Structure formats: structure tokens, C-alpha cells
Amino acid sequence: MIPLRDTVRSRTIPLVNFGLIALNVFVYFVQLSQGPHLNQFVFLYGLVPARYTIPEIAAHFTFSEQIFSLLSFMFLHGGFWHILGNMWFLYIFGDNVEDHLGHLRYFLFYLFCGWASGMTHLLFNLQSAMPTIGASGAIAGVMGAYFLLYPRSRVLTLVPILFIPYFFELPAAFFLGLWFLFQFLSAALSGSAGGGIAWWAHIGGFLFGILFLKAFDLFPRFAAFSALERATARRTTPRIQVVHPDRAGERPRLVGTLSITPREASQGTRKMIGLSGRGGKKLFHVAVPPGVRDGTTLRLPGLGGQDENGDSLDGYIRIVVSSPLTGKD
Image 1: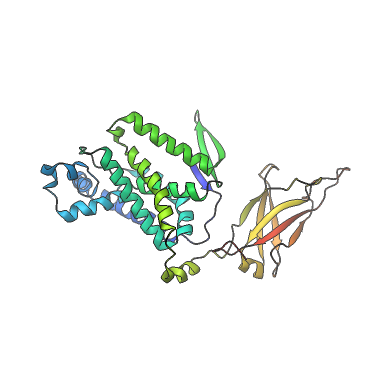
Image 2: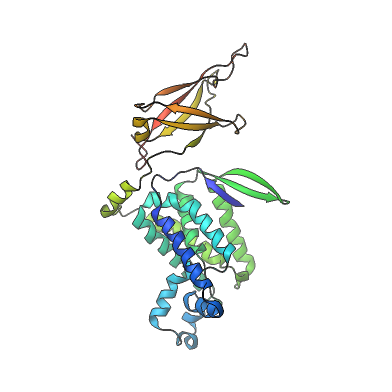
């Protein structure tokens, strides 16, 4: 299953998430520049359990090298597809978790999840001399937090069946729950070696992500970063939005709701909507006039279904004005 996007748009620009992606890509290019010294580079900066449990091996490393590798391993990757997959998952799920925690708390949360995933792998592979690298453990922590925060979000997922691509919009709780189950079964069936994949790091990262989210929520956002969060707040809602017609009445005259920001309400904006349940292919333009208020209904000619004579009825869409940061007026 390949996630393509989720339906929860972040309210702020995810500066830290973008920064983490950039840092991972930068370190990957540093790896590529190592040439014949790549294996030595990975053994030095990757997480090798035997370096901590076998004294004869630990003696070859300084204390600072041992400490540093407990963090550096999560920024190394084993190849192009490895880093591409990890960064894609981080891009999809990380922005919303950063939204919830704030920029600095999210950065610390990410590092804690990565460290905890590494410790989990070490405990289950005490004697292993194989380096463990990759951001997947930290990203699993982000996914664990997303699982707790946005279980009702939906994830557009590509599922190739017999080389034919199928697209499904799956509930986030189902998608992430299935992903976690796959990690657990893979860990149980792969033995201590894990087939070269740190399954237990993924499991530990996911579970610790849930625990760390609860712990971080006990502490308030850092006041010093409030101005930065306001500066990075998104000023607009998505250009294209999907709305679900209200069919509770005899005639589906109310098409749905359209979300805009206070700035868009003040200045006016143009959006495109796709009506769920009506083919999902045709888009309709909606012109929102300046000065519109929360709860205002706009008339959409011909989009209210048909009457008993087969004539088209006008539909109506309700405007929801919400703040990018609070979700309220």
C-alpha cells in the first residue's frame, strides 16, 4: 500500500518537517560521497548493537562516538528507494503532527522517537554486528502520533493488484493499524536477524510515538515560538475541496460546506469543488464575494438535484470561516 495524500491539511507551514526532509537528503548525498569508505562511514555513524554490548568492539570507539551514533543512525539510508519511501511517509504524516505540537516540540518529539526506536532495536538484537540505519523508526513514531490524533482522517492509497493500480480512500486508523500489524508479523516471523530490516525499531517507534505524544501534551507550547507559528500559519484553504451533499431532506438542495480563512472571507476568493457521489470528476467554480461571514449560504445554479419534472434546482453551499491556527472564528 502506497499512501498518496491524507485529507487533513496542516494549518501552518511545516518548517521543521521540511527541514528534517532536507537534512535527511543532505546526509544521503554525504553518504554517496564516501565512495570506498562507505561501509566504514555507516559502521561509525549507524547503530550497531554489538558496539554497546561486546567490550572488545566497544573499545574501538570513543564515548562521544558511541553517544552520537544513537542519533546519527536515523539520518542515514541504505539507498535511493529507502530514503524516498521514508521521506514520502514523513511528508504525508509529519505536517499534521507538527501542527499539533508546534515547531520546537515536534522537532524534539521526532528525535525522541528515533532514539527510542533505536533502543528498541538494540534490546532485541544485543549481539548483532549489522548496522541499523534509516529514519523509519522516527517516522513510525510520527505515524503513531497521527494514529492517535487523526483516526478519522482518510488516506488516499495506491494498491497495485496484479500490476493494475487501484485507488482507495482508507480511514487513517485502518491504514496505520494495518501497517503496524504488518510490522509486528514481520518481526515475529523474521527472527532476530529481521531479514535486514529493523522491524522492532518500527514497532518501538510507533508505540513510543503514542506515549511521547501524551507526554509532550502535558507541557504547553513554547511561548517564544508563538510569533513564528503565527507567521507560518497558512493564509488560505485548499484551492480544490471535496464536499459531501446533504441528502437528509427530500431534496438535496444543500450541497455541503466550503471552508475558507478569515483573510479569504474579507478579500473574497475563488474555489473549485468536487461533489462526492456525483462522479467525482467534474469540478465546479465557486466565487466567494468579499466580506462574506461564517454561516453564509451561496447559491450554486443547477447543483441542487432535480424536481419531479426533471428540471434542475439550484443548490446552496454554506461557508465556514475558520482560523488557520485555532480552527475557530
